[in-house]
Image 1 (cartoon, helix red, strand yellow):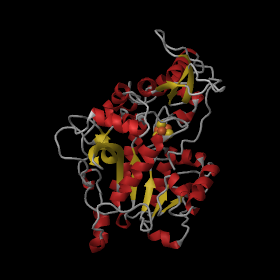
Image 2 (spheres, rainbow, N blue to C red):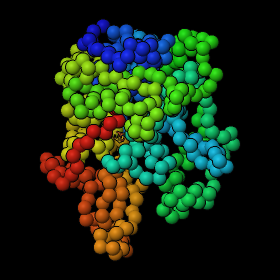
Image 3 (cartoon, protein in one colour):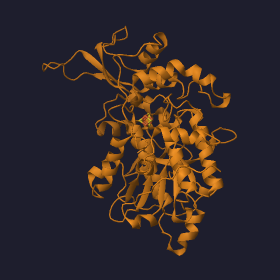
Image 4 (tube, protein in one colour):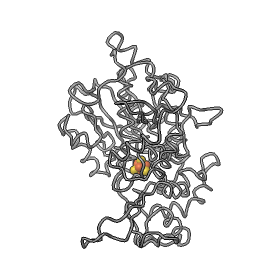
Length: 457
Ligand code: SF4
């Protein structure tokens, strides 16, 4: 076994050493190195309640899924530390007399989903991403990354709330009726009452996908989704275990825990920003707006140990497995994430076939899934909002309309008549694809810069 570089684990207080540790695993090489170093230096302890969590957006590259599978196997089989895959999931229930779909998460097995042979495996065709869009009714964008907060931050909080209750399984959620209890008129009325603007037919069309998902979340035994499961933590807590199915993650009695993330030394601004969050008052709205739990203490061991991009690359070059994607291809996280900026995405689109040619067949990009630009074009077309522009700037109502997609707002010319509206300023996945394929060597000069997506924080 190769030994990893020594990393320092700096706690803000010696007391923190005794708290459960949560490794937030993003699927990239940095969080992979962090995990391997923690394991090899014996820093994780299943009895303390430690766990590794990977939030699957179902929009990662197949090679990333292969890498996460390998890390899961090492972590569980060699070191006995539970590594759980989680996915955003909705279910139907009644609250305050109104039937609606509620947001939660489910566990997924670290093997690919197959309807017939592996129905509880992880999804990889954008199912969860679309479920989130259909549930909220509009697309996430560069200005409002609801995908980060719902698919990652929210899922982690919900998962930990159940995990720290130290039970053998998660709770079943949702009603027990065989059919949906949702009513079209009630749903649309509730949408209008909440300030929603969609006409009935448009609204219901957007809700179709989420309403086609499971009516309930089944109870899931941790040991069916992990070789280790929650047994070591349950045994260690013995009679001291909580009688409740969920532990509070907010408020005075919020669970205290240490979270470990793979930010590197060459990302000083992100590291400083994350560490500032530790200083925020535990029940302040500012702290909660960052997605941080009230009892959470963040540690960045790679950054604290001076480990940067080059060290990460060198580390994986010496291992018996690695993420089999070129390190400069920028394919980690959701493959065509709008936060990567137009120039990066243009290169990914143009180089897709070359990158695939260098990969074994079973981890190449897959058509009509999020590792193919066409999936993003289709989803944007399906859920883009077209609304009247409220104000032309001189107090008059505007004849123009705006379309709101992944990239924000684009202004359309006159309201569509028989002809589709001509776009004035264009940045959407469709135009990016067209531009990339026809001008593969040129940069998109009027495009968007890359911005940190903060999904790994
Ligand atoms: S990687 Fe991008 S698209 Fe995926 S969840 Fe994060 S911000 Fe959203």
